[in-house]
Length: 178
Image (cartoon, rainbow, N blue to C red; front, side):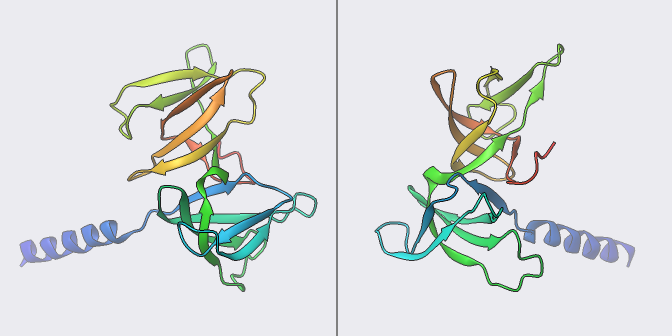
């Protein structure tokens, strides 16, 4: 009887762990301009237009639901809707306006750097990219994602284009995630 109980408890715990969804959020890079929300992953038919307003501090939470080569299917909700009164807007937005902010590692001299991995695997090869004084924003365009918390990003640093996988990033418009 104990074995059966133990087995059932293990099955329930494993089932709950597997059923938990991983939510991926991004920050929209466009502020104070209209952002088209498309009806499909290709084509130009616009379902909605939204605008983030930096003057009145109106921003959006953007959750990725699905991906295509050029766009993400997203659920967009207002950061001001704390009571979930308004339903989210679901549609497709261009990948080129989806970003996250960098989170750094630190070396033995307390200098900050980014690990840019070749694959979404912490055992894969990586390059260290040290922060420079004239590149403080640390904003990366999100071009793909993998299981767990891995994002494939693209960004310029000191005039060079980088592309690779990161496991440390901040997906909040309001918080530094440190």
